[in-house]
Structures are given as structure tokens and as C-alpha cells.
Length: 507
Ligand SMILES: [Ca+2]
Ligand SMILES: [Ca+2]
Image 1: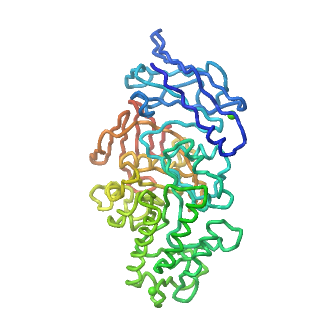
Image 2: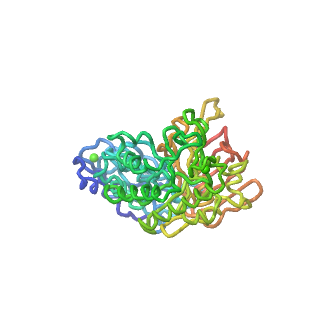
Image 3: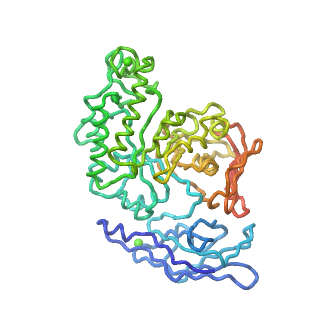
């Protein structure tokens, strides 16, 4: 067994940005040897130093291809790894290779260690199918936050959060990318509304500027009221080219003048027509974008103009910020309109899989015979910027009575990861804090490595199976409906590493 150069989480680059000085963790002298006493145990020894941190979070990463990919499963390791390892010489991890069902040639495996003094475990995951959706007001001054958000492949952030005055000169995205240069950071932008909360001077810098610049283009209702689609969100008249210009120019100005340069934006959202929340109580009448007295959803030419305006918005942004600027779409139009989806680098499926897909919704989403299934949708998208990205997210909370009689919560991200493993999408976890539309950071309780897929999924009656370099997934349809559509099992090197069969789950 060879020892690769140890990986040390990059904190030095963060210091250059003016953060208070602190000592970085340092891993040195990594040694590995398989015992010759017949036990097959592999000893991994290393020295761990950090002048100002009493404990460190240490994760092991393995490579079976000479260091090209660090995606080999980490199973049956004990000792000095995990969230609380004290610095010192000769830290010791024991790898019980013979406990793994599949035979492993430990001589072919390289090891490296990731140490964090901010409590973040940089465990590997493969395939690379992890996203973060967080539209809350995150504290971007906390270095632990940078490391935490850097673990994903794609991060859907609230643009207004990083484009607020507080972070205008603070390169938060660069700090995240200092930990993981490959993460794509995408900013949330409204495709059709302004927030009333942005009206006062001194409110969020981006939302205030957006409010001021789009104020001439408010939509009114058939009864002359201010049109809103959500409490506090005024609908903007994107049929007016000047409105679209105001929106695009605001994005461009912040992208260029702020220290935070996004890889792209998430348009929230594009439907065939305006959707208005039916819980709105303080707005009378129906939106009327063209002001002809006919309500939006009953006005055929207004609906056509609205759809054309969406395309104009997208192409104008691309003309300004270039082909390389990623555009991800939320909303049902792109889920079911291939020509429109072809304008997108990615799709975000919000409240997955409850929108668009007919019941049984989850089974429909993965049904190759359904014209708008997720494999098909993925094939419509642009690939020039490293995509396509299909992101599945859902903040709703699912609980059930488990086999012990207690209450368990389903980690929907773990469910969506099972889907992502089949159709090469991206699963997004959520904190599931219980608030209905709160898109907040969540993470898996079980990092999984099975490597890259070896072929397409295989459908066999009630089962779908897909094989990977180091494992497989097996999905078995149950109701086919969210929130309990299927059972699944994930195997890594012949070992069952995750199973959900409500009311049973493992681990
Ligand atoms: Ca430290
Ligand atoms: Ca009208």
C-alpha cells in the first residue's frame, strides 16, 4: 500500500483574504502497512498538528486508480478519524479490510486524509451528485460555513444574500472555492417579481436596488390592485422590454461590481402562465399584465407574450454575460417544453416530485414511457458549461412511526440521491425545519461512495437496478407516490450501506 500526499484543507488561502490569523491543521508522515499476522488489518498512521485547535475533524479518502479519483469506499475503519481527533504524533486508524464482503487488494489503494479545524468532515461521495439549496440568510462570515457549502457540486444560493452591502467587498464565493474549486455557485434571481421588503432604504442592498429599478413596471390586477403572486412579492411586467432591461442590468451590475461573482443564476421561475398563491388574502382581482381588463390566465395573447418574454429575458442575459454564464431554471415550463429547456444549463425541481408529474408522481418521473421523464428532461439541456444539472429539492418533512415505535424522519435528500444515482442528477438535502417553503441547508447522515456508473439503469418489473464501479443501487416501487414512493438499497463493495423500507431504515 502506498501513501499519497496527505490532503490538508486549504485554510491558507482564506487567511489571505483578511480573516483573523489562526493555525491551520497539518497532516504529515502518513504511513500504511498491512499486518502479516493473518488478521489482514491495515494500520494507517499519521501525525496531526494544529497550534490552536484542541481537536480536529479527520476524514479518510481512498483512491483505487493511482490518485486520479478519490472515490473508493471507506468502510470498516476505526480509530483516529471522525469529528474529534486530538493532534499528536502517530494517530492510528485501523482498516479491517477482511470485514468487507468483496475482496480488496489493499496494495492497490492509496490513502489521504482531510483535516478540518472547523468541525467539517470532508468525506468523499461518488457519484458526484450532491447539491445544496439554501435561500436563507446565511452567515457568510463564518469560516465553517465556507467549508460546509464547499462539499457540494452545485450550490443554489440566494444572490441577494451575497450581494448585500455586508458582503459586497467580501469574496465569499472565492472563500468557498478555495476549499473546492469545482463547486458551482448559482444565485437565486426572481424571474417575475420584486419584494416589497426591498422598498426601504437600508433594506437588503440587492433587493432594494431591484425594487427601485423595477418599480415603474408593476403589474396591476383586473380590479386595479397591485398584483402579487406571493405575500409581499409584486408581479413585474416582463412583457415590457424596459422591465426586462432593468432586471438584467441589475444582475449584471451586481455581478460586476460585487466581490461575489456567481457561476450563474437560478431563474425562479418559468411556468406557462403566472401562478398565484391561493393563500393571498390582501389582493383583489387577477393579474392583468397587458392591462386589457382580461385576467392573465384567461388572456390567450397575454399568455403567448408572457412565454415569449421569458425567452427574451434568458437570451438577453446570455448576450450580456456570455455563453459560459450558467442559467438554471425553476418551474414547470422547462420540465415539459424541450425547446425551452434547451436554453437551460440545468433544471431545479422544486418540491420534488410533486410538480408536473401525474400520479403516481415519483414513478412517472422515472418512467421512460412518460414523455417528460427525468432522463428525457436531462437530454434536452445545454452541456457546454459542464452540465446538465438536474437538481431535486424538497423542504417538506416526512415522518413515520419506525419499527421501534418511535418517530423517524425521512431525509428526502437521501431519497433523491437514490433517484440521482439512476438518472445522473443532483440531490439536495434540507434541514426540514418544518416551515413549508424554507429552503435551508441540509446534509446526508450517510456519505456513500460507489464510484461511477457502469451503464444505464436496468428496469425489471417492479425493480430498477444500476451498477457502479464499487457497488449498486436497487430500487423497488412501493406506492410510486411521494412521500413514500419506493424502497431502496445501496450496496458498496458487497456490503449493504443504506436501506429505506419504511418503517425500516438502515443505518
Ligand atoms: Ca487551528
Ligand atoms: Ca390581460
